[in-house]
Image 1 (cartoon, rainbow, N blue to C red):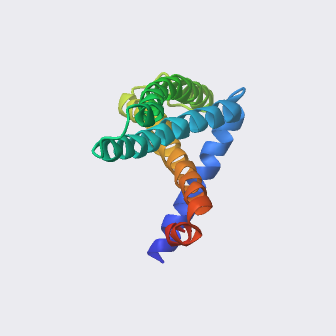
Image 2: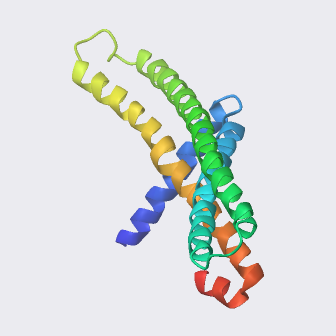
Length: 173
């Protein structure tokens, strides 16, 4: 029963985020773009590790330098690509998070204005509500985006590995 509550809570969070992203103009598209940019940055990191490991091990065999140039260019390209994609992901991801928080604050204050809480000395409650709304920003930037982008990279790496060795890809799934 404990796991059922966890699943129900996770489904409620997904519905909550979906509703908030619908309320933001262009929210779902921006969130998808931020997820793809985060996945691109992570994929560049994985490729950078793979190409640099191959380059180091191949260079230990003392081949002609021309054999290593493509890998050296790959290391540079993946290093620059990782930084550029991470920067763009942070811009778009924080833009989405701030827009979501703005919509949530507007909705919350609109509902609170219909109650007797505004204008009275209920500062602790209002402070708690504001802090809870600010925590939604962390959910978008620190939970949802990394989880989705990591999932995309894992699937992409498994598919790529499957093109070379299907048995190895089957082990990852």
